[in-house]
Image 1 (cartoon, rainbow, N blue to C red):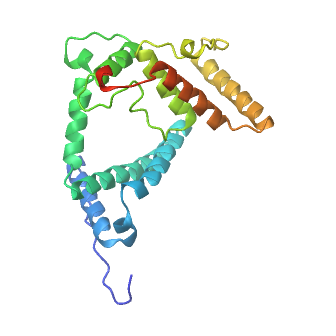
Image 2: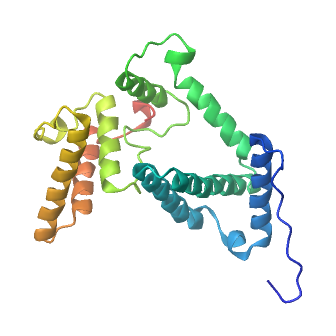
Image 3: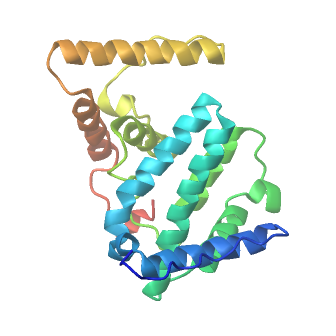
Length: 240
């Protein structure tokens, strides 16, 4: 702050509490930061996104650790990213926080026809199959089975999401590449989780010993799946 300048007054939190007034105070604070803070003024979508990803991973770390106090703090940091990015949209006249929330509300209702319509889904797997089918039928979606799988995902998430898209499109992701399933995991979820971690750890160690990058290797295999299962995406194939 320049010498002699008067400190700004932050928008106060409502003494009586309440979700809506607190959200309004946070919105006002983000707008003030955008106007007055040199760092916030300098940001755009491309420069802020690495911070958004960092905050998302910190939320995941806190959740996996079962640290509720840390999770509350990290969720706040991630919420700032949501408010800030929607403010950037508002500045360009594209949308705003209300528009983002309204679109999410409509999407969640549309993709839960087993709750808000006549569809039937008794298991989480059936819900996911229906979710993918509804998503493919929505207007504005890019063409191709893998069109909206983000390329910036880490290799494991990129492979998992691409496999799920292939499976929901009727393509076995292993058969497509002539691969066979690995050893079955234990039936117990806790034991299966530990065994999977061990298997992945051993593969990473094998890559290290041979001087190979497991991230790049997995990305290369996922790229083969995407080219094999959906080699020539075109508009008449429908949205992803």
